[in-house]
Image 1 (spheres, rainbow, N blue to C red):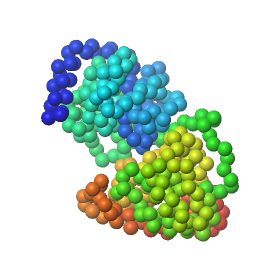
Image 2: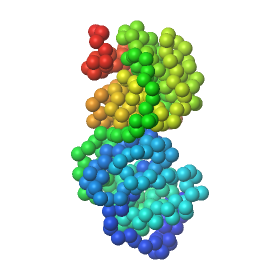
Image 3: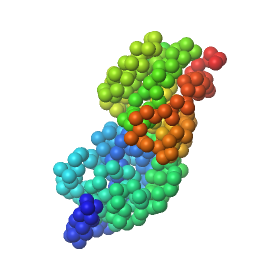
Image 4: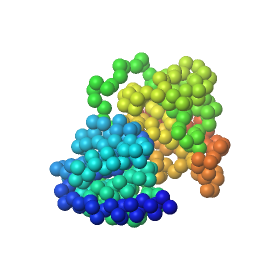
Length: 353
């Protein structure tokens, strides 16, 4: 019923919206979480290199606003505030005045986003079919939804407007004044044991055992990172690893990015910091089971490793899962070996393992 009403509202309103002439005014829509936003950066860079004189705007989320700040390939960032129903008209008016002729819908979790785009006067609205909450008919150029990495999916959208897509690595731009003071000698290893979705979490005891073995083997300095909500989890892990440090929880994203530049290695569940480390070209190990790294893991990142096993349940219960025992297939020793191998290859450590 919601979709039917939205489609009828768009059909009734469209005749009163003037179409903009093609003038290389491009709006990219990416209004979800950190990882999803960073996955857009290769496509954005390729579009800029392919169309150096185009005007490129990005409609994004609050976290996306921080992730894309100072990106030299973007002319203007636009914030999608929630609930969109309250800000729909003011956002529509702002975007319509920019006279975008092309809209590339990379990812939007809000139902009203595609109807909003369809009322901006663009001649082309390009996106992937099957992921738009039943509103695919509002796309002018729906693309088939193949099993492919999310970065590649966005690149395929960019190719529809003639962009050359040779760049596939993530990017994140920090200014010199955003960097943090140097830390004491390391190596420093960050453990990120949380995630928004509990079904993506490697067991707490596995992180504890890994931390102990890292301290015994290297030695190293360990930093436990996470959000404010994950503080109890961080404290539980740090309390059982002698000498472990707890990071300041809930750092602003850009400050957390500056912190990651000081880390010699990040070991994390499948969550945003994995992709942030890739964008910063920092060594990272991502742990996967309930999700497939071939679709959402590190991609073309030279210092990234994904450790994964197939989900134990078919189909995976995802958010309904209360005990993701599939992660028991990955033991601390396997992650330890991957960590020491990666650090040795980067000449961060010299001690044999």
